[in-house]
Image (cartoon, rainbow, N blue to C red; front, top):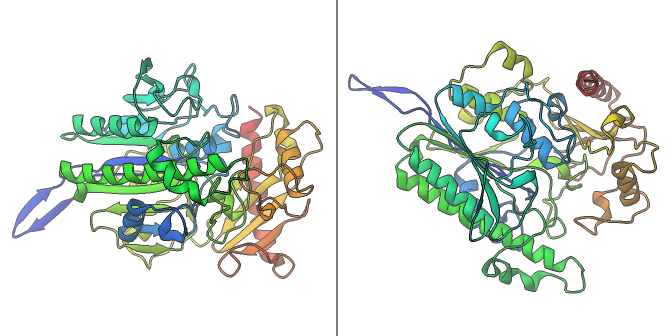
Length: 475
C-alpha cells in the first residue's frame, strides 16, 4: 500500500497580495500484501478499518488502478515510472529483483530539487553494491538487513546502513521513525516513502489487534492462525494510518499535503473472506491479482469520489513530477511509460489518452536466463475497460512458477492464500482471452471471438512491449 503526501509551490492572489505556498511535501506509504477487498469501505464484512474508510470518503479514488502481480516489481515501477521488466526486475528474489543502477528514481528527482528524502520500510530492490536505497536518492533510510523480511517484533534494522536493535512492533517503529523524519524536516521540504512489511506473512501482530478476529477463523484450517494474524496486521496499519493523518494535522501541513494510499499487489490471506467480486490473487494475471486501491488526498484540491480511468503504478512518477514541478531530463522522459494523472485528479470528468495500454506479467521464472520461455506465462494487457489475458507455461518440469501455476489451476492442488480454486484456474494455454471488467468484473465471459479487432490491437501492443523487454533481458 502506498501513502503519499505532497506540498506544492503555488501563488494565490487576493486583494492585491501574492501569497507563496511552500513546496509540496510527499509521503508514500506502500502496503505489502493487503488487497483491494481488505477495506470495510470496499465491502469487507469482517475487517474494521475506520481510518482507511475515512480516507476513502474524502479522497480522489481510482477504481481501475493496477499494480504488478507481486511486490518487488511494483516497487520498481513506482520508483521509475517504467514497467519493472524494463528496469531489470522480474522477480522478488535476487538477482531478478535488482533494479538497474542506471534507472532514474523519483527519489533522485526529489533530492535534486532540494527535498529531504527518507525511506522507512521495505525497499526490496537490492542492497549490495550500488543497489541500495542510499544510492537511489534517499538521504535517510531504515530497512531490514540483507533485504529479507526479518522479524515482526524487536527487529534489528539498518538505520543509514548501520545495524541497530529496536524494541516493539516493526510497523509501529517504521511509522514512528518516519514521523521523526518529518518533524526534523517540517520547516524544509521532504519526500517520505513508507513501504510497510505488513500484512505479508508470517502474519503476526500484537495480540490486541489479532484477538478480535480469532472468532472468524475456521479452527480446522491449518492456516487459521495466519489469517487472524493477517487481519490483526491490517488493524494495526489502520491505526497507524489514523495516527499519521493526525500527526500531519498537528504539524499544520494538511492543507499542503497530498496523501496517496495504495497496495503493492493483489489480495492474499484475505480473499477467502472478501475479494470485491474479483477473480485472481497475488501472482496471477487476473484482475484480482493486480487491482489496487488508490486514494489521493491533498486538502480540498482534488474532489472526492471515484475515477474509473485505466491507470496504475507507473503513473505515480510522472504525476508527482507534474505536481511538484520536478526537473525531468530527456533521459528520464525516455524511461517513463506512465502518464500524469493530474487532469483527472483535479477534474473528475476529465479523461486520459484513450489509446493508452498497460502490461502486467507475473514473471518469477526460476532461471534468469530462461526469460524467452515465459513470454506468455501469465500476462495481461489493459485498455480502458478491457483486459486481455494469456497463460502459456513453459515445458521445464523444474520451473517453480509454471509448475506451481499448473498444479493450482489445472490439477487443482497446492492452493496458496485461498482454497477457492477459481482464483487459480488459468486461461486456455496458447490463447488470448478478452474480458470487459465493467460488465464482467469476475472475468467469467471470454469475448475474444466476438471482438477480434480489439484482441488484435491489444495483443499487438503486447508484442511490441515484449520486444522492448527482451532487449533489456538480453543485457
